[in-house]
Amino acid sequence: MTQAIDNNMVMRCVAYQKGVGIGDVTIEDISEVLLEDDTFVWLGLREANATILRQIQQEFGLHDLAIEDACAAHQRPKIEEYGDSVFMVLHTAQLAENDVEFGETHIFMGPRFLVTVRHGASHSLSRVRERCQAMPQQLAKGPGFALYSIMDFIVDNYMPVIAGLQARFDVLEAAIFQYRPSRQTMEDLYELKRELLLLEGAINPVIDICNELMRFHNGLIHKDVRVYFRDISDHIKRVDQAIHGMREMLIAAMQVHLTFETVRQNEVVKRLAGWGAILAIPTMVFSLYGMNFKYMPELDWEYSYPLVVGSVAVCSLALYWRLKRAGWL
Image 1 (cartoon, rainbow, N blue to C red):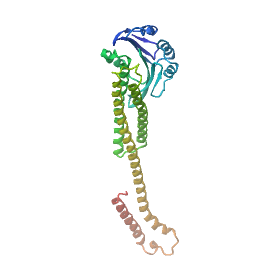
Image 2 (cartoon, rainbow, N blue to C red; image 1 turned 180 degrees about the horizontal axis):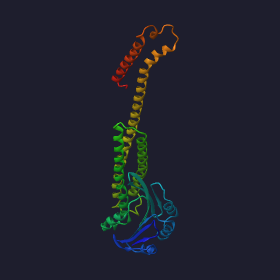
Image 3 (cartoon, rainbow, N blue to C red; image 1 turned 30 degrees about the vertical axis):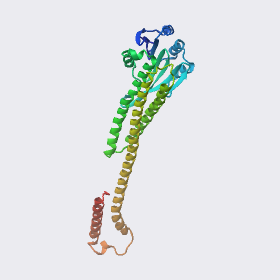
Image 4 (tube, one colour; image 1 turned 60 degrees about the vertical axis):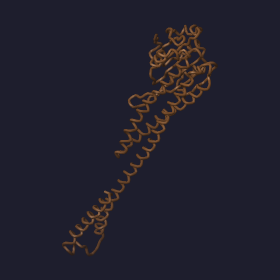
């Protein structure tokens, strides 16, 4: 059953006994259902408010600090132990018109329950629930397998984001090597680098979380389920390698962009210097006429003036041709 707490929250609460769903559960009945043997409760929330979280705290016996973090959101990826339960924060990412939007999924897990609270940009976990319900033998091992499925789903959604960032980088790289450097291109490169750093900050702690889940918390995770978290760790390492490779290419693209911009500026300077050299010839010659010579060429000989002008034109054209061949103009 789906209950609307407010316009921004969606809840799904199901009880599982020996890996098989036995029905939806209301929040008020959770504590009673947990008393049954071989039963655990899986509760999913989105944008949960403080009121519903306090109710959940009473039903599951959650720690005040964990509830406070879940209410505040904007937490770093982490795992914290509170008695016989753990609290985890994972960052989610998804593409929205070529931009990366980040969100958070907060997870409470105990021996008999699993609670997820989603904040911000994140995909629905309904497919994860359906996948787990199709494998009752695994789900019968407790909430640990459901936790693995959620983490695996979040990590798998990093790959489309990486592919989208790679497509953006390919467009920027093509613009650079088509010799079209611009301020906007550099701004887009920096924005892409910023998103890569945010994504890297989201995935790196997941490796430590997986290592802790594999080594500790024996009472929460069945021994047959721990090996699955190693698979998540391998996926994260592949994502990290893709980010690292893209970041190296991004730094190289920035350097190439700056190099091309420097070359372009040098070309402008060369052209200005070339035209300055050409204009120096008539400037030097005609500046002589600004001085009060007694004998001026055009005064004593009627062909002096056209000869001087023609000589200046010929010298200027010869210099222009020479600079053109040298690639300065």
